[in-house]
Image 1 (cartoon, rainbow, N blue to C red):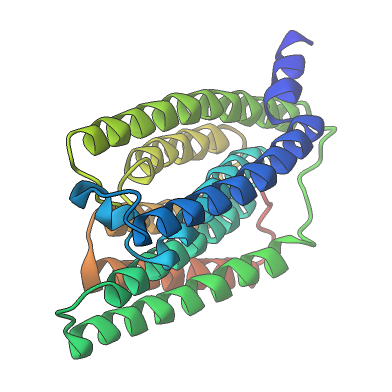
Image 2 (cartoon, rainbow, N blue to C red):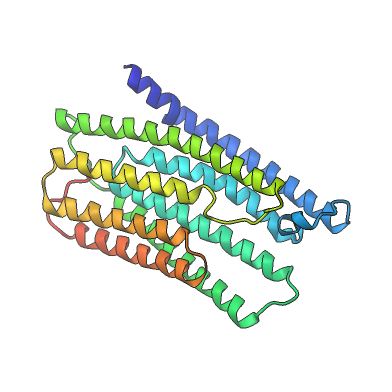
Length: 285
């Protein structure tokens, strides 16, 4: 009972509703505050070359609300872990889709504020990122459509109840790790700002978090094999983990290669889901 109460406090419906309201309010405030700082910088009230990457373009203000929304979507991803493996993978692609959108806004802001823009290279890169966004967005929607009406495992089976409880415990652990990683990443970024390093990168937080996400996925895969020994189930979940690993590598690689890895991950996960959905009698976990 105590474990269930911990899960409800951390990942329950009421907590989710509260965090959603808070994320929306903070995102609105953060956007307006960042926009106000951009105005002050434009009027030379804020005069610092170190802060130029943060305030030199009004499009930079979009980075703040999307970062806050991404933080909430990561929480939603953790909440999806006890539901099913495919649901959590679908939420994962929703997170990466927003991450790519945030990168596109950042790159557009950099182009708008630069004097020496290489039109061919910069526009080509944004085009590839836009293509990655479309593929990731389509993949997220495909997962949502395919998993919205999937048949769940028999919850009256004692072994399945144990498995679901184990995934809830893992989700609570990952939520705790998420908080510590977020605090650490934000602290390191603030220290970098103080030292004059105001660069914005998607590796901040997401690189570390996806490493822990891969670990949790592998643990779920191993736990599931206690109760479901079907090869197709094992192969499907292994393919999903592989797609997560590719995303993790793509997060750490800037430029065209990172975008290409995102597209590859989406194609792999969609293909695995497509093949497994047409295979007979694959239980969802």
